[in-house]
Length: 192
Image 1 (cartoon, rainbow, N blue to C red):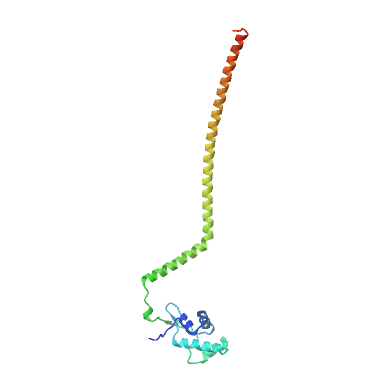
Image 2 (cartoon, rainbow, N blue to C red; image 1 turned 180 degrees about the vertical axis):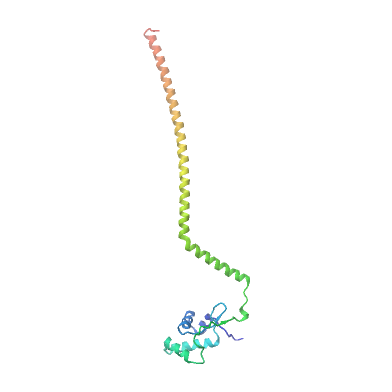
């Protein structure tokens, strides 16, 4: 079974030019290339013959303006674009698409959308996250410093109490020794 309709990539391979060249020629030469229901270009044998003729004229040295006027004057070639937006259907043998394929395509599209949204908002997200983290870290450090200060204060109070009790004990010991020395001195000098 011989093909009757071709995609742009198939035509590009057939005539050995890049697809973007075919799109460019379509626009510059006002060619009316039919489209399918998805908006994709569908070339018939008639459009394929036109493309081959355009390539031949290009090889002969004609400019795109000259080729455009030749396309208008040659009756056997497809008429230049009247922009009537013809829509052709793909042949039915290629129209089967599984639910798994649709799901995979959906996941890819959704993944791309999410990825682009994240990239677009990454600076805002980074700033927001950095601000939140900085605030939380500052609060946590303040809390830890307060706890350390309270622990240090408690330790210093305990140390201060220990030093004061030691000083009191020394003062009492010293006072007791003074009293004892006075009573010894009285005995020595005869005072009782």
